[in-house]
Image (cartoon, rainbow, N blue to C red; front, side):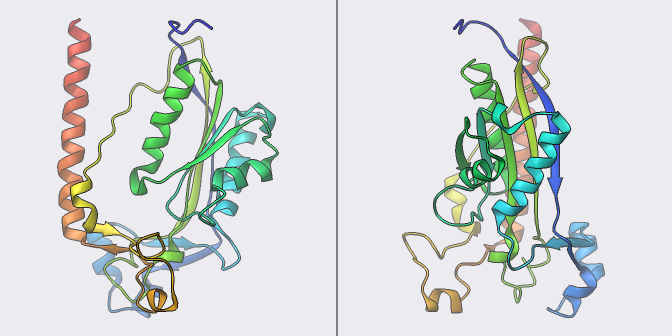
Length: 251
């Protein structure tokens, strides 16, 4: 294999899936002390989708994947890699990606999940880019899927208005032509881990009746701090990528 070859990446197909149940701002007004005006002016959200009790994250991911495969006119056997970005897996293991592989019959694919919260799909794109540009793999199915309603505290008005359920998928393919994926940029700041978390359910605080009763398995967020950090970091990322682009242009 010629590792010096500069491969391109194309987007072969996309797909998505939303559960049937719609939860509107008016519905939330009857659940917690909030209003449509308050939610809309601060978030722009009017409604969100909520998965059925019997639906798991893998069910959402599988539906999105099937739509993406149909859009790409590709058979599951052609997939080399399946990546699923999620913080709400069906279970600790096996991965959601493995469950998707089983349902699709994509027996040739390697599979793993990515836990990077809101930025998970972006991290997945960076992983896919590395796999494809290395020449080791030709096709990647990348899925972002969440059943956040399963870890939402529906009595916490600061968080329950924000989250819903759904899945989106894209199939990326290595090509000899120009690339459609121009660049990626990643960053992390573990010093701010406390401002957005779901503390219960891991090895530090395993699930117990007490943990569930105290809703420690649910999303906890300092919304103002998350907003400020996100704005600062997105601006920094844009500026760094722009400077990098200008540097390449001058070379």
